[in-house]
Length: 184
Image 1: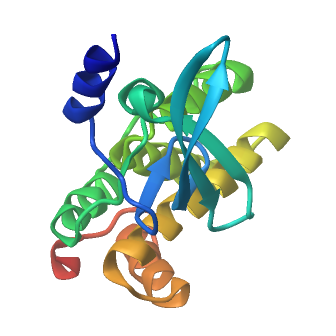
Image 2: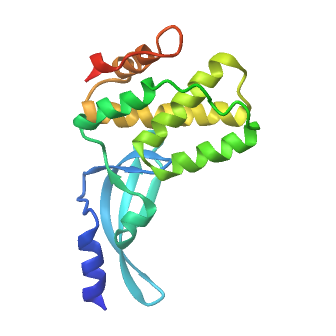
């Protein structure tokens, strides 16, 4: 039984103390420690992760990394792809849906933890905001998506927020659409 648990853990990404990782919908955090706890008579290992933006501490079972979506921070080589998503022209920004349906859809996408999904949610809400007032929930989602996106890109590029935010804003240009080829 212990052998099976060991095998499952080996197929998932292993993190070490001090590693930066992304936890879906919460953002970039640092693995502070790896601890063992006895639960229902069985010993389980957990990553203890502290989210950089708010100091929240999360316990993640090491054998459950894939199912919760814990992943490494994107590499610098993936950032142009994220910028492509941000710069993508999107004619129909789901303005025909009610705000609560859009909210649920966007929340589900943020929970995937994919930087591309986070970028798409940010793009859609940012562009929607240019044409109409967002609901309170949508404004909160826009802020959340912005924070998640900024923190991960800043971490990957090792740059400050002002510089990265300037790059992101330039993708939208004055009419909401830009060209990201200069940001590779």
